[in-house]
Length: 511
Image 1 (cartoon, one colour):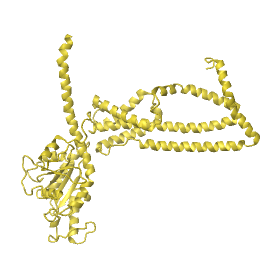
Image 2 (cartoon, helix red, strand yellow):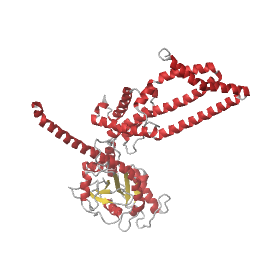
Image 3 (cartoon, one colour):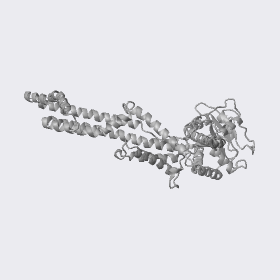
Image 4 (tube, one colour):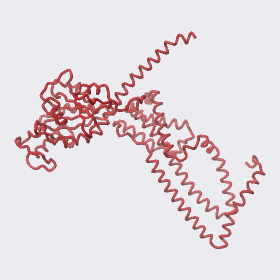
């Protein structure tokens, strides 16, 4: 380095720095003469310790800030998506910054592909190369969304990131080795001139350097982990049906089926663009399904004891109540009648966001209901990429339980007093056991005219508690419908574009 430099310029530089460099040894000599050098050294050690402690605290604060900016899974994801997220989280946790330098672009691209492959294997376990099942537009969409979110978080979390250019980082990296050699030369000269000062300075530099290296390692690790999480997040959103190529429609826009059902509903004056919650009421004939609808509306809405129309097995009713998402309630024929064959039942359940199963408390023969419920549960279990809709059991006709002439509500079922309350509680527990549901999911009600009981309080509270899971089912259902519509729309655009190209092809060849 000396041979390549102008020695006169180096001499001028040394002359400029010599007076400043002489201040430390001269000051130490003066402290030695006055006998206060030990006090000065103690103060230096104390300040260094306080500075190190402050730096350690700042590092912990930064770690908490980075942890707060960490990507988390979407609570609306179905169970299969949660399994994929666990794999992505394990991959992000195991990352070692030394293995993935930020300056190595191809290595970072390999890390992103590994995250995509991790998710693809969950959704396509039977494929030898599951990543090849991803379409090109969807792959580009994942990269676009992940880079957008990562850019936002870097700008918000890393100081001066909006001022540093890529050139600045590259130049700093290139000068790193040269600066390190110059610093080693300075340390050697200081050790010769003033050993005591050099020893204390080296101790402080090591402590500060260790804290800085740890902070940089934390930031480096966070960047890599967030990169993996972002790629994994949007890959899961794509495979679970939550990510679409077009963004022109809201996620919960009304589906064509719901628009038709709203047109059939009794109240069409407030027809809305958002997708309503679809609540399906099931149960045996004469269990009280239509009476339940009337009790929910607080007025006579659904006719009772009317044979269903075979052409339209279910009847929709629009329900608007405070605290509940605007809903369409579907009254269905009995599961034990010819009006609701198994295929129709499966179709209705597949489109439902919440199921109310009405069963009579005074009828112990529930084997047919259990068989139908098991068939429905099997249908739900066959779709791990979807949330099963919440199931709420409505135990009706509790007024007919022994003693049948007694009816003096309210009844305390937690600490039942009297035969009627004890029998209602026993009936609820028996229904829960027969239909294999938690006791908390079975709500006893009376739906008889003039005796309506436990609908406005317990049943409505249970409905509102299950509104969150039902809304997640509704959102995924809307996104599935949107993806189907998007596929047809894109296909039409592509065919139109191909037709225009073929139409102009002869002119291009001739020209």
